[in-house]
Amino acid sequence: MKHLYKIVLFSVVMLGISSCIKKPDYPPFPVITFQSLVAHADTTGTLKINFTCGNGDIGYPSGETNVPPDFCFEIFQQNVNGSFYAITEPGTISDPVTGDTVVYYYNIPDITPVGNNKEISGQIQIALGENNWNVANNVTEELVVWIVDRAGHKSNRITTTPVLVP
Image (cartoon, rainbow, N blue to C red; front, side, top):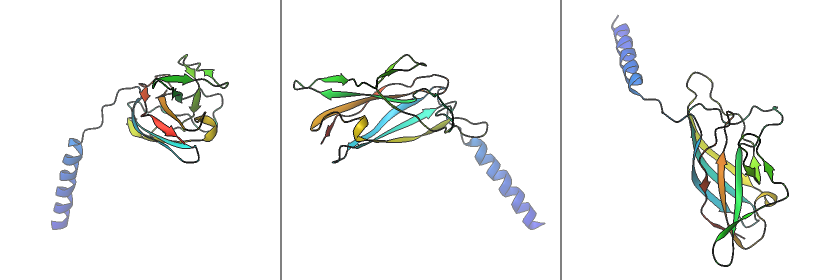
């Protein structure tokens, strides 16, 4: 009986503690912040951004076809006077959801949580290859990045710090 009392008391205390923990209150659209952009010697790179989303509808299920771009970025290259100008490529497309001109993009896998609480936060890390971000060696570039959720809500746009591409 003494052990049952301890178990009940422990359960009540844990229930009280768990009810005090507030769940996050993120907006229903994605919000991103810049973490880092690193250029590697082989002209590849690594981009990291942090994100939050109140309804968690980030990414598309695997196997789904004809999905619109949901991780998008544009490249800006520094010219001799120090200002940045947009680089456009033949692969430029128009996003059917947002109407944005998208030069480069990736598709995020479905990361929607299971259960009632769909609010999510995390970090997305993208490996940038030679063929999708570097247009010339020994130039300074920066990226403008945004993501789009399945409902078509576009995140804020962030600009990375400038980086010298070797």
